[in-house]
Image (cartoon, rainbow, N blue to C red; front, side, top):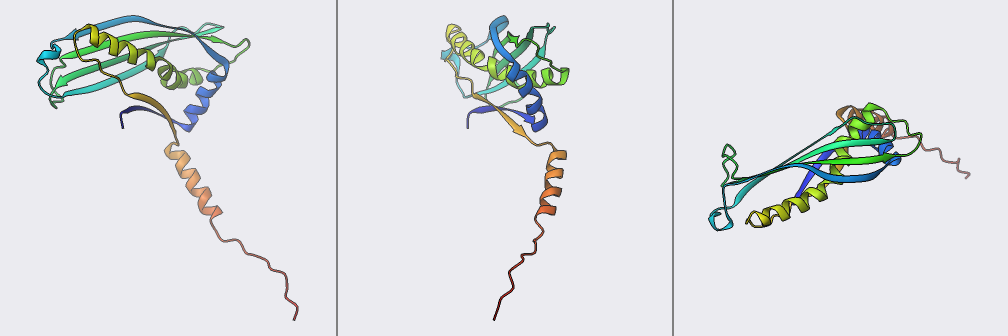
Length: 182
């Protein structure tokens, strides 16, 4: 399947949901970009090995606003050599601003969890469009970046706790039947 997955623990998802309930996207904009290509579409002779990197961080949150910097990059090399120097590089940095609901009380852990999941998820379509149109302008075949999914997974501690509780719940319970009259 053609996708990129961000995995968060159930606890991180719960933390991020408090920000999600109290914020609305105000603006998403490209703040910087780096482009490089040593190829043209006529010179691509073998399949490209493509890799993506994504990172996000909170930048100076204000009382009624949050701002995140989301960095996305795609590198591509001919062949399968992982050590090969990338022949195509598209790096971009987006700023995304969220307006906060009046009176919203957010903790640093909630903001951090939101940055590593929701903020990236909200910026990803902008990067996909930017990548596709930029490659075309560079004279390269347009490439659609994979879909992005955020998956909530239990931590090992949560799995252990669930396993213990399911073991205690799985003991057979005695069934009481009414006495039979003969």
